[in-house]
Image (cartoon, rainbow, N blue to C red; front, top):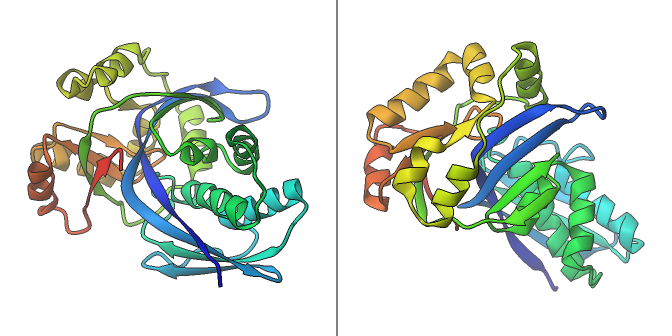
Length: 280
């Protein structure tokens, strides 16, 4: 039986800038999205109907229509006229509701796998349009490379980064993305600085200049309500991370290491830590 498999890579936001609430109730954003080597695995096989099976360390996940992987499959099916069903197998490794974009990565991988399995032959632009309808982070995850994202995350342009080694420390609990943005609204959260200096430093491969410029506008609202996330960031810095930043809407925190050996040394102090690199 033919099957198609894609890796669904997690992401880190090197900056996340919230510009304000839009008329459609979404927030206008700017962000630098970089895929990392931590990934789920998505396998699609021919079937008479659409089904999803979830396995792995984070298997407690909605397998039905609320799962973004299913939403993506249905969206592609509607566009292509449902050429067939599919059995989708999702092997989870990315922590759930952790700010690492796992659900969006899975959705993007499903779009790529089913486009191939069903022989849809859609262009990158057509798949990106479907991805934008599925979820705000899905177009960036579909791109599979470092990108600057604007709007709700659907307007992308390629970006350059040097190889980076990270110590990723999950929070052990989830933070809903809508909650993090609501907290930013409630707190009158400020908008971060123009990211041009950061983008230029990364394009030049100058990590020393770039590291102090990483920021996430959602950090303070989340830190206020979950002090343990702020404590994880401080602990990573104390352990020798060059810099540390909360991933997306949290609660995961990623510490940047000077080299792979440093990342593995720092990770020894955090039982749940994951050593990963970007780009993968």
